[in-house]
Amino acid sequence: MGTGRSPRGPGGSGWFVRQQQCTWTEMWRTALPLLVGLSPAVVFLLQLPDYTATQEGPWQDYKHGRQGLDSPGKKPFCSWKCLLFTLQWPGAFCQSLDKETLCKIPPSINNWTIHGLWPQKVGRCCSCWPMFQSDVQELDPELNQHWPSLLKTQPSFHFWKQEWEKHGVCAACVEGMNSPLRYFQISLKLRGQFDIQRLLQEAGINPSCERPYKLEEVHPVLAPHLGDKHEVQCVTGDQGREVWFQVKIPISRNLTVGCGHRGDGDPEARDSFQGHPCPPQVPFYYLPIDHQDPRRPCG
Image 1 (cartoon, rainbow, N blue to C red):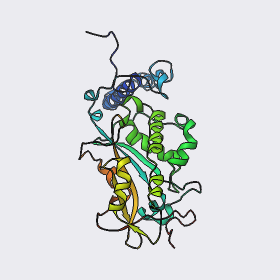
Image 2 (tube, rainbow, N blue to C red):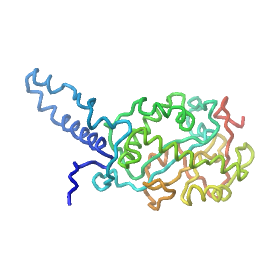
Image 3 (cartoon, one colour):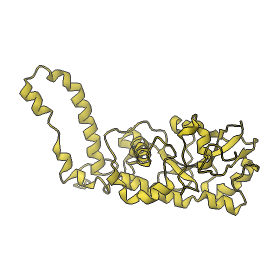
Image 4 (cartoon, rainbow, N blue to C red):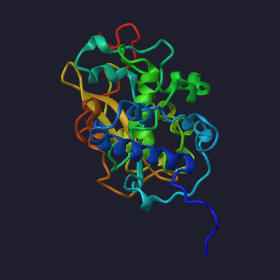
């Protein structure tokens, strides 16, 4: 029996309209060569911008999203089942860069920071859902503390914008993440839930230039909280040593820990900044943070 409601996309009407706008954009590009023979007056009228996007209606829910039905079968990029919530250790981030001058660690940063929240087994979902500073302005203090850019050449907002346009739009088909604001709110909540530094400190695992660790020491500490399938990632440091860089936490669409869909990897997310799984039998270093010389925390 019908409900009498208009069809909606997986993330609500605003999400559906944006997908339609992508379709119309592609149609316009296809049809443009055919319009060359039209009179200049007609072409001018056809090129006028569509101001309906700024009016009340489907776009009024741009910032906060709108309630909607999640129908993953309707859109290929909504068929994903797992996300990776990735936290990075600033003390090792600089070791992952080819140029040491690119790195910075703001003075207020002394904890694990967010690298991203990535739906898995998806491609680039949509390039037509922009993000503006006003979308996340109310979250600025928290984002600057927990999701800062560690690159001198990249302001933090550009980092967030990049993550939204590449990964957040893919997650937007889930009702709770169907706007930039909601996507970053969820990410911050996950950051609060996974307080890795506290768990490690309580287990006596602290940053050190001399004391190496092994997976067999770290995994039992994190697994009860991050799930058995979390991944501890390393980079190869300047001295050829394995350096602890990231932790990747698989979570399901409903944001519960763990996800049983192996192989749902996003190659770019998996290889970002040259990270790799820490070898099981090779000791790795959990380096301290040095704000003055972040590339060489141990001198």
